[in-house]
Amino acid sequence: MLHKTTLYTLSLLLLLIGAAGCSVEPKPVPYGEANCVHCQMTVSDNRYGAELVNDKGKAFFFDSAECLAAYALEQPELSDAAAYLLVTDFTNPDNLVEVDKAHFLQSRELPSPMGMYLTAVADEATASRLQQEYGGRLLNWEGAKDAVRNNEKPE
Image 1 (tube, rainbow, N blue to C red):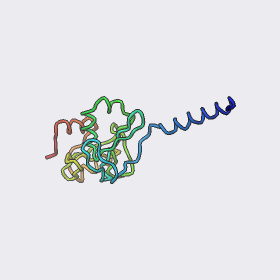
Image 2: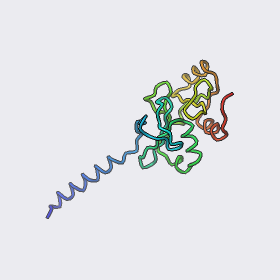
Image 3: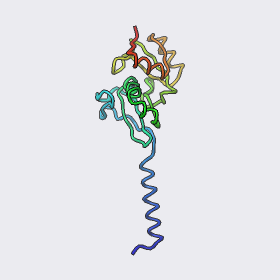
């Protein structure tokens, strides 16, 4: 029979191990390995990936900001409860940016994987510089979702 102290220690250890495995954190987008939750295409272009992490820590991957936006519009109960909604910074592909802090450029000169021409960056200055170089219009997350909802593509 196990001693009470040993049983307590084992229980505490199992609790700590379980809690560590359930952390709610963004995951690196597995380019070339994951399929987009929305369109089922392989997530392949590391300049355009996106991610939703639910409140339990499960990550869902998208091949573009427009797929994440479409999913958020179709599944508002999941996106509203998500711990993270993230897009890849076009100019720094290893950096994921929260959608509410991201700046989006919609320009025909920067074709995104699903043809909505949405490119996300982390800061306004970079977005402005890209707009000067490629034309198009600047959007916030709500504007990006509206463009996807209305299937608005740049002229």
